[in-house]
Length: 164
Length: 81
Image (tube, rainbow over all chains, first blue to last red; front, side, top):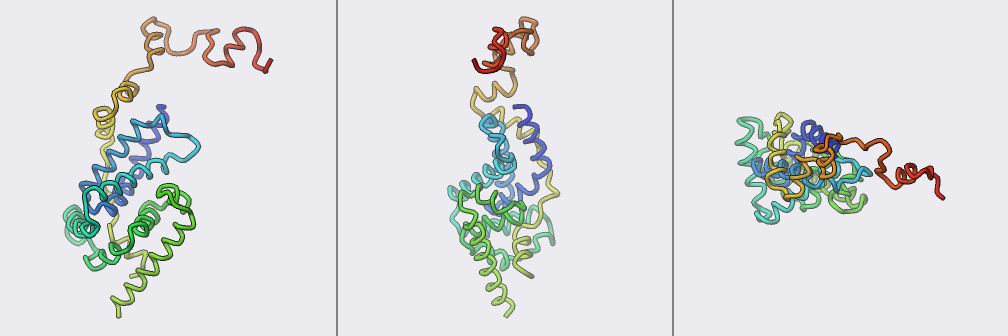
């Protein structure tokens, strides 16, 4: 049991930034994301006896963080509000010049269907493989692949239109 | 800008942020179910009893801690009968 606690601490210290980034991308609010990541880890500690060694602990915690972020959005925000809050939240938390994605670019990503966005965030921000993403989002591996492909195609089209 | 760069820019890296692990532990203790908090800070009752009795927490010599050990202690060996 102590081992799980140790593993959680190591994971938290090693990957906090990535957890925070994914949660921020999902909820559109850095402060709320900090709270979500902390609470997810606290919940993992409280439920650590339910963790099974068979799977990697990273995937178990990623699932908790992602689900908490998705629940937060569904309870508190209308879909269109995420990108607005993201613009304000990221810009104010990172200072001048860091929020390099201007609103137009953010809106390109924000207009994607929810599942496609979540797959993109877990793939690019968390560097998770397709199998782990599938487990976290409770979808098939093929759906992960298809969602990623569809998201890329949509973004490519939108970028081409923006450039043209 | 390609698709990956676009997604990367959606939320710029937050790797510089450092989480507060002590605060996570506090939350786990404060908000969790009573029995879980109890488990986090105190040993199991059996261990507590042994500690209080000055036995330490390791099994006593010859003490059965599992079905397999019970058989051993009873002199049956560990192979199925």
